[in-house]
Length: 422
Image (cartoon, rainbow, N blue to C red; front, top):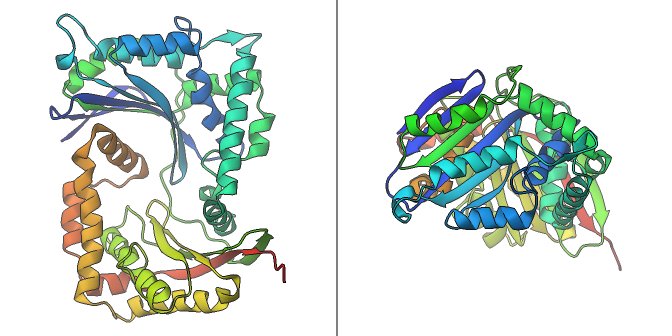
């Protein structure tokens, strides 16, 4: 069971005490309103911080410190959760009870993570120039690699079109041009600002009690000067006019994206029904989109839908022959209409529910999966445990799915088509 404790104003510790694993997990996330002006620097920050701290000023010494902690690991953690972006660290480390007699891991791990957060290498009024420039190159390479993934690129372009009035269209890592504009001083100034102002979410999964973890964290947190600025509550989709857009690149397979909106978010009592609706519609290999549009009609190479519950956005992505664009789009809309009309078999409903329930059962398979579900749920406003959510999914009927489907409205389309070499 999750326990929650306010360590100080704006700093929340959430714990799942679990003795089943040899490994523990600890995440530290600063919460920011998703904003174009800072998305890139927020994504850059944890990578810069993980390059060195006062006691371990380079990667070699950091690696040695982690090796001394029985092969512990620390990585960057950057998430887009509804209206928020998070930036911080994820730590994985062995439980104290598996260490040699007299050795501790949890306490020095917490201390080292906070050292990395609070004691960066600085120079000339900013972070280390070398660290910032090196990590800028790495982040730009990551952004470029996502652009080269045409499926991801098309999905991102669709969200930008749909979210002209909503920050959900801003890429999780920001834009390449924003990364290029960051320098070592502006990055450090922003770091100081968000450390001072941002709500901080800390999540621990392991055998230690919440009181023990709090005892370790509070002296570290006392070092931060805080002028907290509260975040606005998560909101649903902010409307804008729909658009049909396309782009041409030298690719062999067209990428069609359709965007839909619904007032149902994960804060809505109809959320479980909307999740099942998405699974019936296009959420897997038993869905209508896969079985009808791909298998029976052979209109696409790949197809599927995704539902962003924090915002009330549903998208469909399909890899198609460019010449099949109109037929494929019409077929996708027909399958949504079939859901609205109640053309859902018992087998379709059962398969859709089981796909979701299988994922919920897997939440407790590892400390990382536990952290991901509960931390994201808390930040997004889900407010349901996996057990409660699973019961809601199991209770969904065809009538519930129909009512959810009727709230889904087609909004925008983006088509990435190939060059005609004919």
